Length: 224
Image (tube, rainbow, N blue to C red; front, side, top):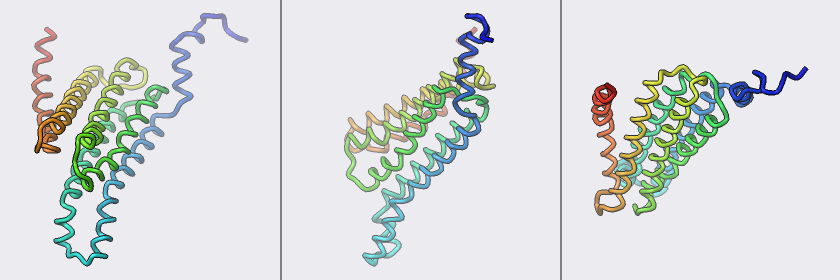
């Protein structure tokens, strides 16, 4: 028999719980995310593999190949480390996620999209002449990755029934995401507006850890 209208089975929380159970298990989402990130990190090396074949056809020496592809090698290493860092952060968050709702699933899919795009942007930096749009597509995509992770943490903080992450840990992570996203945006603007700086502006990201520590020391004082 159908329960009375407005009964426990018709409450917003009950409907949300039912919707959550219909989407996907957290373990499947974690496994899928790990696979997508692993593929993206592997794709980063493909332009260098192609260049080895071209060098062999041109009868270049190993040193000549290294000299010709120095920029691509640096771009590969930087993007590999950045994706690894993004994945490590995302993995730490989702390690304590127990249930996945539809909005959380789509936030994760959007985050994966920015990761999958990065090998394309990386190939541009190593093989094409730098310009303003390239800075937007490369550095801007990293800023978007950080922003989406921040949105994920904000969503999780608003839906504690999905996880067992301490609220303080989520708040600290959100602050870190804001700082990193802001530094990516500032680095992108400097690369565009200051001639000769280019991708060196990304060294600003080294400031994220000390700034986050300063904010962490300041926050307890501000609460009192």
